[in-house]
Amino acid sequence: MRRIRRKIGMVFQHFNLVHRSKVITNVLAGRLGYVNPAWSLLNRFPKEDVEKAIKQLERVGIAEKAYQRADELSGGQQQRVGIARALMQDPKMVLADEPVASLDPVLAHSIMSHLEDINKNDGVSVLCSLHFLDLVHRYADRVVALNEGKLVFEGLPKDIDDNKFKEIYGRDAERVG
Image 1 (spheres, rainbow, N blue to C red):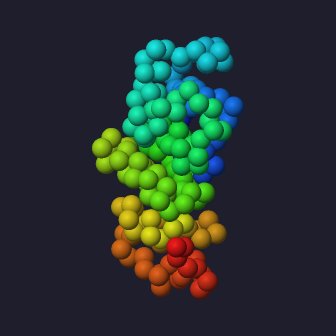
Image 2 (cartoon, rainbow, N blue to C red):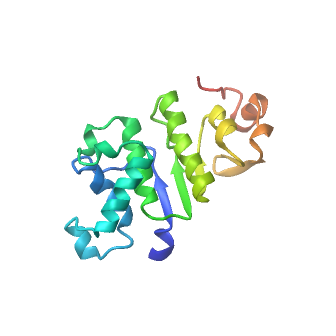
């Protein structure tokens, strides 16, 4: 089970960072499934993993923050740390649980662009929970809509317009923004 889990990266709504730890330590946490647990307790990681962590931080545009505490970062920066941490797993799939729910629209697009890049350029499947129809239309290739845990729609983003959105989620459902 551990081998399967380490190939699934997670990006969380509330970032799930260790706030008192440095950014680099949070990113290296993505390697925990690959390293000796005793060494990880001491925050000892192979040099190659540290270099890889810096590269992932460069990829998401915050390498200069590597040695700052995680709680010194903005929300968008913290979410980029979460993406870098997920990439450290060399994932085949990334599960993103409302990765933009606590971000403003500009940052939301920035985070979604990083996830899109991972999908298109790395060939990693990205399964993303979104509640914003505009983001679904812009970034999704396929849509699955659930209501009270039941499948109520499966198809293409273009097939969900405002009327279909209200049909799925109720007459009070509206676009945000």
